Amino acid sequence: MLVTGIGLSGQIKLKSSKVLIVGSGGLGCPSAVYLAAAGVGEITLVDYDEVELSNLHRQILHTEDDLGEPKVQSAYDKLHCINRNIRIIPVNQLLDSNRMKLIMSKTKYDVVIDGSDNVATRYLLNDSCVLNGVPLVSGSALQTEAQLTVFNHQNGPCYRCLFPVPPPPETVTSCGDGGVLGPVPGVIGVLQALEAIKIIVGLNGLLSQRLLLFDGINSTFRNVKLRSRNPNCAVCGDNPTITDLIDYEQFCRASAHDKVGNIDIVDESSNVSVQELFKQLGKKIVIDVRPKVQFEMCHLTHTVNIPFDDIIKADGVLKIQQLINNITVQEVYVICRRGNDSQRTIRFLHDTHQDSMMDLKNVRGGLHAYSQYVDADFPVF
Amino acid sequence: MKITVEFGGGAELLFDNKKHYDVELPENTEWTLGRLLFWLKDNLLKERPELFLQDNSVRPGILVLINDTDWELMDTVKYEIQPNDSILFISTLHGG
Image (spheres, chains in turn orange, brown):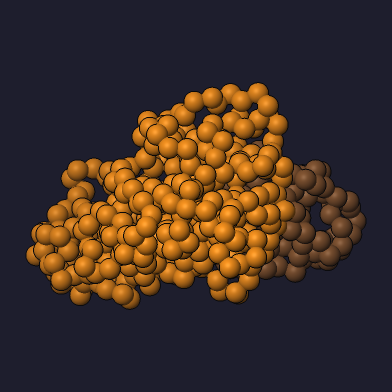
């Protein structure tokens, strides 16, 4: 309230404002902390997920005591302790078009914060914000880099103006797979709260029509100038073709969460169970195709690491052949984290080395299944 | 002609995992950004060209910035590259 430009009127605007925060993760948590503490009158939190140990390095509202709890409940409890004079509404749901419509029809939000983790939800939030005339503060992070911008504000561009066509699904990496350094989304989540406060209070200097690029390794912020609103944009253009929310999972050919689905691309006869693997450890050759860094973190004894990337791009195939020539066994087990890359390895080798004597077996469900059904002490991440 | 080419947001993975290249372009021709895209594909790209280029432009999800300005404001592929330009290819992130 003491800050020039905020004052009493700014504080009253904050108290009477309503903010929707989608995602109670690495971006949503820090964002919510600052908005609650700033006295935003009503904060709605939407997330469908439960707290996992691997979330805690970045999702700062959750603790070890909250493992297994819905993230919105855990976030609600902490935010309520920070500020008891505001209303916090937890919504434990996976967002789709119908649920989003319902949420937006009940409340007129001043700002929506995009702290989601997938492409489909990003398009959903964008279109919904355009159709309801609400500014969208969009943050994203992966590994050591992050991006931040404000869409659909004072005639600036929307997400679709920038990205009329969704990216090919194979080019999208999630934090769960690629990893993310905790403070990186932290920085952006905090800045999302700042942009939201500026929008509510009515300050200038917003990141509308600008994109902030944060590189955590080089400690650089780069502020780049973006295009204007596209008059031909499908949703915010002068003659929009999208006038109602669509099916965003279909549009993006990707699901509205960042959980990895299981593929099934090898013959049933090529699958073995984790129990069978357990019996054969030390007897059969077992190739672990995870990246080297994951193998170093944890692996089963009597397994050899030949990463999937090396098999398709480098000398991995040669290493496999040497391994097999050295020993007379021909049946080879292939394992990875969840049982997807192991299948891809088998398919790749089957397609490219049909003359090989290798009889490759996929360990179904990978090390996650091993931890679940054989040895609960084997770490999962 | 000397220019700087940079990659970020994961686009560097296609370019030997290097984020910064000092590039010397042959002087014998006029350089548009469209021509540069194919030069990069032939000279610096290490893998999976379809994840960089599609239909004679960058694939959906990559932003091109010329001296920190969106190439949509600079005539996109028709932009005429000037000495010491800095061209940044940034893959958009979705995690959070």
